[in-house]
Image 1: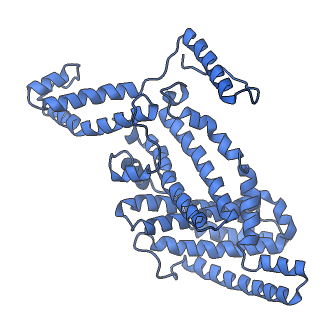
Image 2 (image 1 turned 90 degrees about the vertical axis):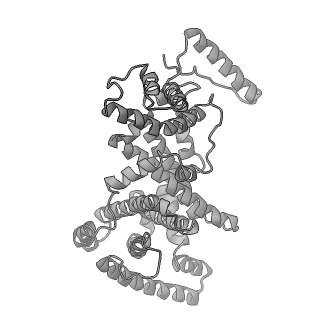
Image 3 (image 1 turned 180 degrees about the vertical axis):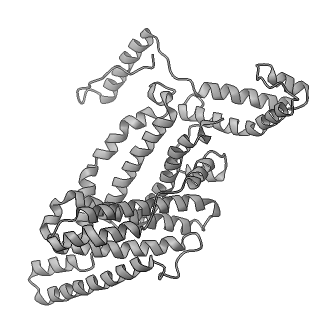
Length: 428
């Protein structure tokens, strides 16, 4: 039985597939703004932080699935270099810890707020009238959001109408609910903590998580609409949105459980409000039947898998690791129906139950399969066996590879900087 059908493997496979869908949705949504000449610093920070974190977790899942084949370095390894490179994207162009705890909510709370920036600007210009307009507008904004958040929370967002179809309508309602609740909690944090908020990085990190997942959910809904509400994308949409709201729920619970301020407010947040939010959940983790469906879909050779992997470089050469995997996958998928015929013949006792090297010859003789089908089965078995092999080096090959690698690195650098090399790691 293929390992992809084991439930323990289906779980990380579904996570990889889901991340592929909503990461691509976020990429397109973010670039649509950049293509229009807009330069949104908070949005790009959200995209950079989350995309690199999703990549890191996805490559970890892939390492777990591939096991020893992912650990043994060499030309056959398709993923180890990506695993090794993961910390680069995490730390370069703004370290992710800094991005999450300071930039996303720290900048977003000011830049995305309809009145906060106007208040600060008016103070800097010593414009009393402008400050009064912004200040009282801010007060009205707080009360409107508070009322909206309470009503949507009590009704679980069911009062929102007119958005989406049968697949996404409920998600639009929940997103409006989360947005109103987030706006209220953000104003409370800014009003109560003031300048201290920038030092409460654990708290601002949780606010950043809520904002990030609301943005991701918006991007997923946008992708679903812009691609024509494809029916085959429904499982990916459900999975993406459920993951988003589950993370939003957990972040809100973290904010309420750790909010700092006056005693009465802390008691309110950690007592009645916290318990209400914990019972009146916005989301929970995706069910097992949904993760099963995602894992199944990406193991089928068809249009859906091609669209999920759109934009990826997939080598045509079998000498490249990913190219070897891809050819083996496509050939084995072609052989599945033929293999089913043999299994059926074994159950009917047309063929011997014990599998042997000459089973295909017996199946051919008894008319269970054709000559062409026999060739496909033989090729699929050869490719399967070849795909699971790992690189093995002799000691001489190891030493030579080290010397060649050092030479190539030095030539590439052209003496511009000192080069430090380490010996390549090997399987045996």
